[in-house]
Amino acid sequence: MDLVRKSLRKTKSDSKISCTNQYENNYTLNIEKSLKKKLESTKRTEIEYENTKGGITSKLDAVSFELFIHACEKFYGESNLHEFTKTTATDRQSNNVQYTFHIKTKDSDPFNYTINAYLTKCSLLINGRNTQHFINNDVIHIHKIMSNTTIQGAKVNVELLNKNLASKLESALESIDHSKSSLEPTSAISNPHKAVEKCHKCNRICKSRAVLCQFGHWVHYSCDKLSEKDIQTIEKDEQNYICKKCSNLSLKSPSRCITLPNSSEIFRNKSIKAYYQLEPPL
Image 1 (spheres, rainbow, N blue to C red):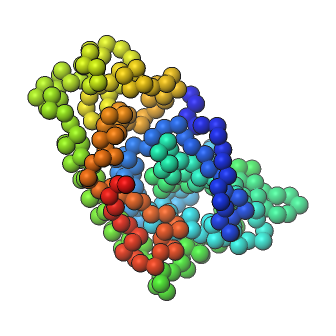
Image 2: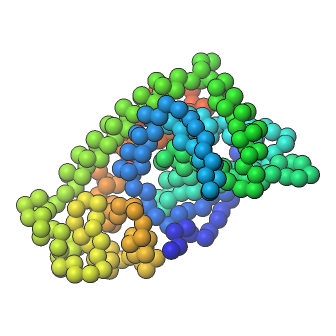
Image 3: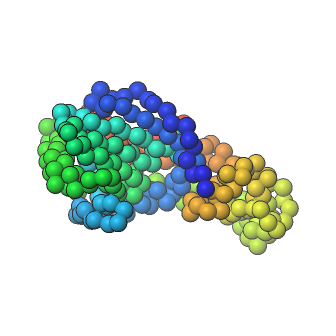
């Protein structure tokens, strides 16, 4: 299954980052699920690293996760002992879903490893040839930077910011529920059995090659003009599908959506009120 578009493009690099790449995944992020995962992460109280067969994994609370990203950029960007590049993965609507730091030590026997940061889950996967170098050396410096990071001269109150973010996320999820109700067609409410069986676009019975939209109705693959790659992704992926009609309605909806913070917003913004703002869609 081809989930990733093969085009890899370079973007303008940060002055502290040797090179920044970006690629696009061939799926659209499920915003509701992503917000729920982010909300769940605000409840975490500990940071633990675990050795697995695939590498070292870790789950962080939402604010500590952003602190970790900021600390990685600062530590590796200012280090004379490392070379690194940062790759940003997006979905089809240009939402950032993952950062990957490719690390290489500058010595005669270099250690190569990657730090994969998953934005919606606030989780990490560190893998490569020598991940123990990260655990034994780098993580100590990274956590020190996290602890010493300040905003306008004051240390970051992780617990308070997590509570504030949780409140914003809960409001955003309520807005999504409200939007679902307003987008649900009248026919689906009066006769849900009929809405499930018939295509929302052509009104013919969906015997095969059809998909259930997140908003409760079915649509034929052909009616939504889906490619074979799109169909394969839909049938094998766990992401909820939103048909093109509902997607267009969502863009026109007056309901507000949440803008999730990233490290540059948190640590370069002068106003603490702007860290977790609810903004209307463009």
